[in-house]
Length: 237
Length: 278
Image (cartoon, rainbow over all chains, first blue to last red; front, side, top):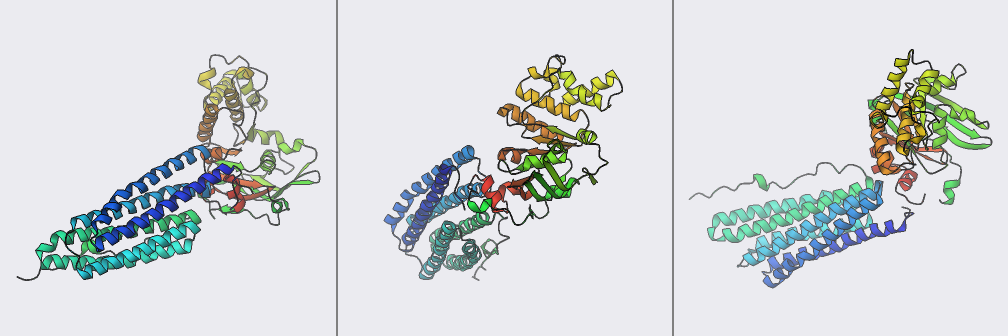
């Protein structure tokens, strides 16, 4: 695309993109560390993650202020307008991802025993997929790669499927041994947080699609998360 | 402007955004053109231009200076006839009737197609006379009370009556710029036009007077087909339902205003409205 006649406008738009890149990097980092913390019961690392969340929040505020000023001063149109609106939306998704990572870290502090091995494996796999998705979507944003964004959007169902199985497994543990309820509940929320990170990632993918094509958001995404209707039968006494 | 942009366009097809503009589904086309061309002597100012302009709506023409938007606007009431070297080709129809056919009375046409200019140009007469003049020469008033009624109604519709009702006999040129422009709009609507053409009607006005005119345009579209040429993208976005983008004498893209300002299809439109080098 051609540059603006007013070159400061280009610089201001580039600044927004840079802030998103920074926020994205931080969110990835926070998320990875929170998973390390919970899977290895590393409380010190968890504390660090909790303390660092503030940085993403501040970047989001900064981006929002700049975006508002840009709209007020430049009256952006067409692709420029979309770029600014999308930057605001993506920054809010990244900020939420940061919050969810912080929440996973907090749960590390609440869980005192080592995690059941298969649950740990399931959650780690979920997290791995979610991290890959997040990294891909940030890449798609940086390159304005709409195909890659679409790919991320479709692939979210894999995280949902894993979440379903982790959910069932945790329910079963709780049924079998009431002493695990405390830990399992925290893990359940931890897994839910990862699943939510996946959802925010697909939001970002949808916004990239809008940014590039200007068309309406992608259609209804196939939802594979069935935990809201999942029950496990009580074992006979 | 890059070099390629200065090469004469090879095709004159206009992109329509979206393929079927919503406003054209709601309103009948009032003005339809077929391959309209305009030459000033040897120089071609407009290349074959095809557009449908909806009734009871505001259509905005945008584009850089010299793109042909004002030239085209002036074809719609045959103002270009007054320029000796100007030749207009193709067909322009209003209500399905060709306005360049020999049996058209140009004076009557200009009563049906009113015009408001960039600089307010009231006659050097009283406020009352400014408005009464048109209806009188077109024989629209049968009595003095009739004429008074037309004057008052026109001023009311132009949103000026309350401000001038106590000084209808004072000169129109004594009003403020924004009031003068509303006086010109009142003058245009006094002769019951079907179409109002506005050539940058707010470019000489401050933001408050501009907002008043825009409010007025929004009200007038209930009853008239309005075509406005503007250099302010924001104004086009605010007041119009249909936007047409002109560039180097061609109509590049036309479509629903919302679509044109959020997601235009043509790169030249994009570059222009976003203020990028085109």
